[in-house]
Image 1 (cartoon, rainbow, N blue to C red):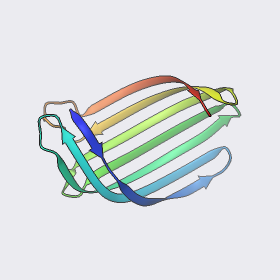
Image 2: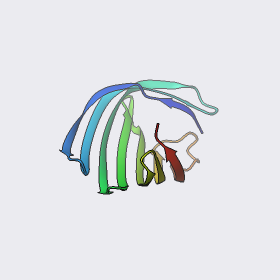
Image 3: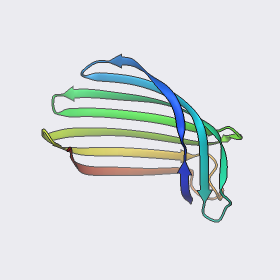
Image 4: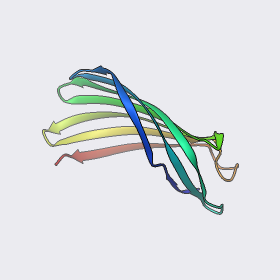
Length: 130
């Protein structure tokens, strides 16, 4: 079980498409990874991350988003973490929306090796914007 995974990074991104109804992005960053797993010594390493994102305003009141990222530790490239999420949001008013999100996290080398590598979640939320 991961107690914490902190990854301070610096990097940049690029908009391949940037319109009012559609955004397609990519980003890269480099920094560090500090991790502690239950029952194991804490580790630290240099790390780099690559990601991509998509945001599509389907209609004036509905938005689809998707984001995928990968994080690799420099001292062990096979010790990686991948995150994928996709969401659909529907506006109720100007300041509120209903949102459903599906998340997938994959830890390539979990501690201990008997743990599942993949964790998923389905989240439904009422969002209020200030």
